[in-house]
Image (cartoon, rainbow over all chains, first blue to last red; front, side):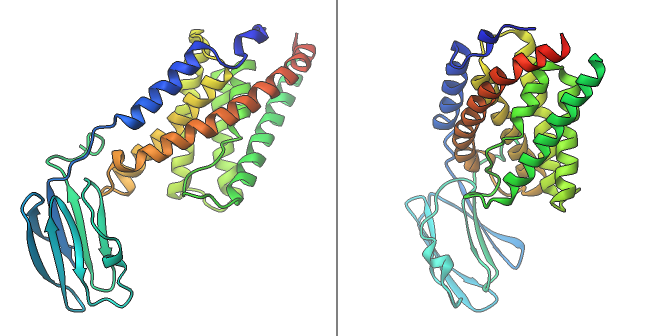
Length: 120
Length: 171
């Protein structure tokens, strides 16, 4: 039988583990997005660089939606959908972030240069 | 007599972990996937009292029977649950058997982290390939530090209470 004091809370290893995981959370690789991928009706068809400002008109299922890329961020400015959830999502800028407009069948994603370390 | 006591202990641990798993899953979670992980108490205790094989058995039985009760056998949730449990049991066994200066708190936190990491890696690589692992992981890592320490403290309390009784039964 092992001694009880072996498992008494707070040993040096616990603190090291907590510090390690906190470190992992706060110093994760910062995901700067590079590409904006706009897909309409599940087909990837428009890819734009995130660092050039522009306005794009997308022909969705319901009608024309206006997308703005400015200062490394993307948003949907106008959309013909009824609830305007995609407009309310506002600006997105990080890799992996997305705006989805279900009625208009528009998905806007941001991707980096490469895929994740995990999915690679 | 010893093996009878052993079987009795193991079955009580299994039953307790299954019921905790089921009850816990019935509560709505603030963010999908976040649970306290109370069933882990009995897996850690099994690792200390018995060994890797028995703890893995409890974990696998917990996942299978618990999912059967909750009617989610062989769904993605079940796959997450069983793989996370097995991975975290292995890692916790490595820590316990290597005699590193970890207390039950640290063991439980590392177990909780492994559990959620395996699930996130599975989720982002197989089930949701579009979602970035690094984008969704911070909140899960932070929350599992908290839930892991709660479970670890409970495990220590339980351990200091059960140890004497276990010694009396087996030694």
